[in-house]
Amino acid sequence: MNSAEFLLWVRGPGLQIATVIFIFGVLLRLFEILMLGRKKNLAAKRSSGVAEGFRTMFSRSIPYDKNTMKRSMFTILSGYIFHIGLFVVIFLLAPHISLFKSVFGFSWPSLSTPIVDFFAVITMVSLLAVLYHRLTTPVLKFLSTGQDYFVWVLTFIPVLTGYMSYHHLLLPYTWMLGIHILSVELMLIFFPFTKLTHAFTLFIARWYTGSMMGQKGVKS
Picture 1 (cartoon, rainbow, N blue to C red):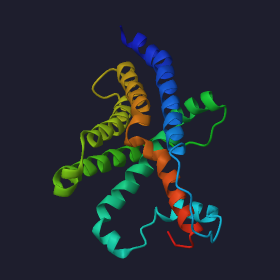
Picture 2 (picture 1 turned 90 degrees about the horizontal axis):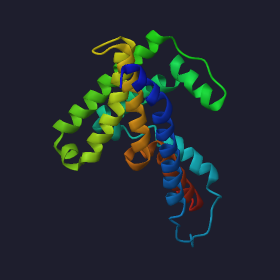
Picture 3 (picture 1 turned 135 degrees about the horizontal axis):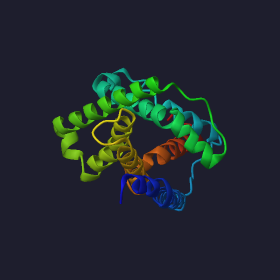
C-alpha cells in the first residue's frame, strides 16, 4: 500500500468504520446510564429541579472555594488550557470545519491557521505538563491506571500528528496526514469505551446532581 492508497482508505472506509463504532458506542453508553434507574425520591419536592440542574452544569466548572484553587491550581489551569485548546483545534480549523460541513451540511467561521497552530502548541505543552504532574505526584501516580495513560495517548497523538502534517515534519505530507486521520479514528473508536466519554457524561452527571439537590431544597 502506497501513501495515496493509505490516505484514501483512512479518509473512506476507515473513517466510516470509526464513525459507526463511535455513534453506536456513545448511544449504548447513554442508554446504559439512562436505564440504570434511581430509587424514588420520598422527600417532599421543593422545586422541579430543572433550573437547578442546568445551573449546576455550569457552576461546577468554576471553583468558588479559594482553598480548592490554592490546592489544585495546576490541575484547574492545565485542564482549562488543554480543553480550550482542543476545542479550538477541533472545531475552529478551516479543514476540520469543511469536514463537518460535508457531514452535517452547515459550517461556521474559522480562525486563521497560525492562531489554531498556536493553540495546538499550547495544548501539547499542557498535555505534557499534565502527564509529568501525574507521573511525579505520588497520590496521582498511585491512583492512575493503564487506561489513564492510554486516554492521554489517544488525546495527544492526533494533535501531534496534525501539527506535524501541517508543518511537513518527519514523513512526507501524504503519509503524515494519513497517520493523523488514523489517530483520530482510533480515538473515535475507543472514545465510548474509555474515560473520554466524560465529554458527554460530565454534564449529565452534573445536571442530575443539581436537579436532585434542587428538589430537596439543597444548594449543590
